[in-house]
Image (cartoon, rainbow, N blue to C red):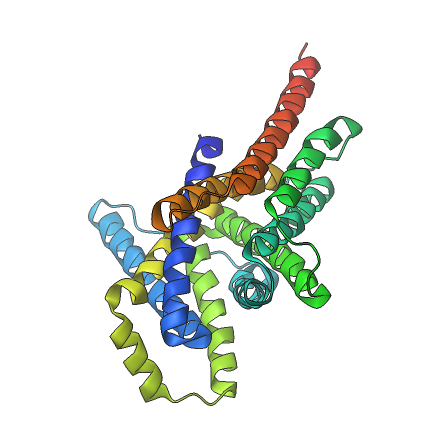
Length: 302
C-alpha cells in the first residue's frame, strides 16, 4: 500500500513546489519561507486540536509524548537547508540538472542509510545483485539533465540538497515512529520556523512591507503551499518508516518527474521527451531492484 501511495506523494510534492515557487517569486524567498512555516504550524496545531477533541469525545485521549534524542527534533532545521540549497541551485543551474543532482544526492544517501541501518532502521546491505537496478536509477537521473558543464559549487550544493532531503525524511520518519506522525510534523515546522526566524531577523527585514506583500499575494499562495506541505510531511513520515529509504526515494521521484512532465505539457505546451525517458529509466531501475529483492526473499523461504 505504501509503495503504491509513494508516487502520489511525489505528485503532491510537484504541486507544492509549483505553489511555493510562485509565492517566492511574489514575496521573496525569505518571506515565503517564513510564511510557509507559520501557516504550516497553524495547520498542524489545528489538526492536533481537532484530533484531541475527537479523542476525548470518544474516550481515547492522546497519550503523552515520549522523550527523544535531541537530534530527532532537527528535521525542520535540515529542511530549511533543503529549501535554501534548492533555491540557490535552481537559480544558478538548469532546472533539470538541479533535479538530477538532487536525486543522485538523495539516492546515494538512501543507499548508505539502508546499508548502515541509520537511526536504527532495518539494515539492507548493498549486494552485487542490486547494483544493476541502482545503476539504472542513476543513469535515468543523468538522462534527465541537459547541461552538465555548469558552476561546480552550485552542482555540489544541488547534491547537498538531495542529502538534506533524505536526512530530513529519515529524521521525521523516526520521530514519527516513536512519538506519532502528527507530533513529528509539528516539531518539523517548529524547528524549521525557529531557524527561519533567526535568518530573517539577521537580514533586518521591513516587517510591514513583508506582511503587505504576503497579503497582496493572496490566501491561496500564502496557505496553499503550506497545506500541501503538511500533507507531504505527514505522508512521507509514514512511507519512509515502512519502506527502504532507496525504494521510497525513487518512488517519490517517479511521481514527481511524471507529474512534472504532464504539468509542463499542459501549462506551457512544452513536452520534454528527455525527462520522460529519464523517468522511465529510473522506474525501470526501481523495478529491477525490487524484482531482485523479491527474488532473494522468496529464495530464503523453506
